[in-house]
View 1 (cartoon, rainbow, N blue to C red):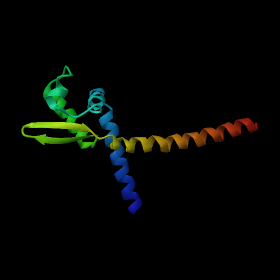
View 2 (cartoon, rainbow, N blue to C red):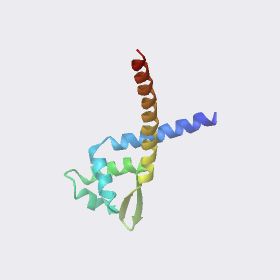
View 3 (spheres, helix red, strand yellow):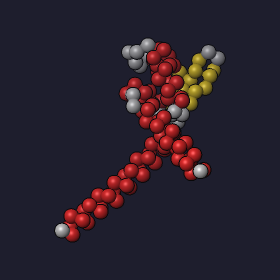
View 4 (spheres, rainbow, N blue to C red):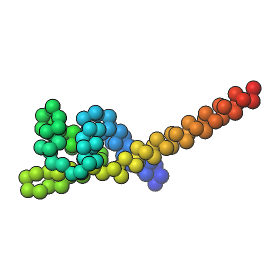
Length: 113
């Protein structure tokens, strides 16, 4: 039972990360934040979309834990949390190994004919 809960939790985390990464604007925000902490206005200034739209993207990134937020007075500052990408990396590594095994089996089968 514990393994199922852990698996469900991991998959929920992976789904959250992939959903957040699915949008080009959010990926651009992560690239910007990988260079350093920025506030909402600094981020919004780099886009041709509204500040509320940027705030929505930041909420999605924050909910997926790809960014951290800290408040200083009235300003909110965001920073990138690259460790959260590990969930997606592990998912890819699992399937990479899975397909490597399947393709090696197929190769051996074809070569045996």
